[in-house]
Length: 186
Image 1 (cartoon, one colour):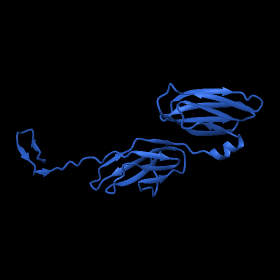
Image 2 (cartoon, helix red, strand yellow):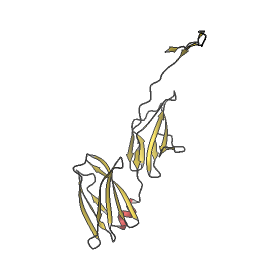
Image 3 (cartoon, helix red, strand yellow):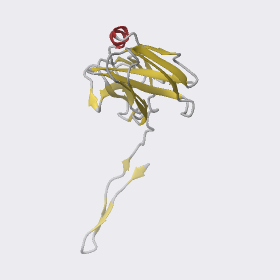
Image 4 (spheres, helix red, strand yellow):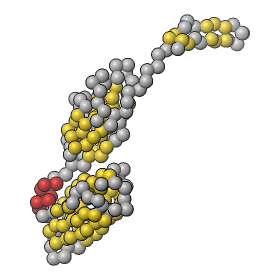
């Protein structure tokens, strides 16, 4: 639209500015991040947009494509900017990197089935107390179990049927060792 400003001073004199034409551009569509292991992808990418990835709110240098390979744990977002300089930022997604294979091998850890209908089993060989906790994508703790190994073995059937379908993070700690595994409840 076209806008002017009219000013009146203390003595009653008025003046009107020249007309200014203002164009309001719509915001780009909010980007949606998909996670596949450590590969982050903008699911609704558009070639007319520029992208900038952020880790914990800080710009990641040279991370400007619709895909980004996460290098460290944290909260990732992506900003989509159009040719008019209008931008939208995605909802944050949590990426937790761990040495899953090394941990699994060291403790003969098995978590199955995954994905599941809400009932899965955790088994492994541990010498120390094992703490098992589950959190949702918002980081809210759903439960924590402390387990003493029977001999050197743990075996636990976990029931999360009461929780909504979605992605959860299972944290398993023993001594100084810790691992986080993505659990999918269908």
